[in-house]
Length: 153
Image (cartoon, rainbow, N blue to C red):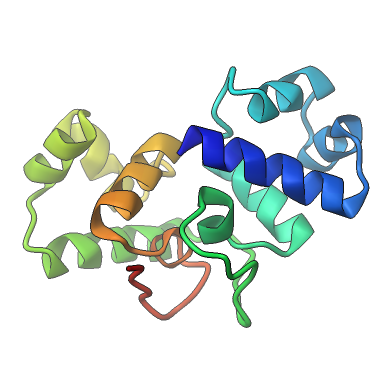
């Protein structure tokens, strides 16, 4: 995942003709921090990934390497923790999973996952990726950026 994401971040940036400093300014972070996102030192947090995707009109699914579809036709740019929590809960129930089982899959505490479902915190990038990769479900859907559930092959 990390390698694919790094390649996509860099590809999208280069395609737009921007330097790392310019992308860092868009994200409201230092060039040093952004350069770490592109070089594998640090995994980009969801908050910055969404800002990146919104600015460059690309989907999270594209950045994660789940699809070659660069962007979905209708995409919501705002982060809605209520929508995210509803989608996570619906996903869990559809797959007949308990919070304990998902926490075990993600190697996190049940309380941490429960906080994601309650909308207290945005799900962390590696956990979102892991869920989406394992169950072949759209990250953009789970984060409420698109309304339709999409499963990948």
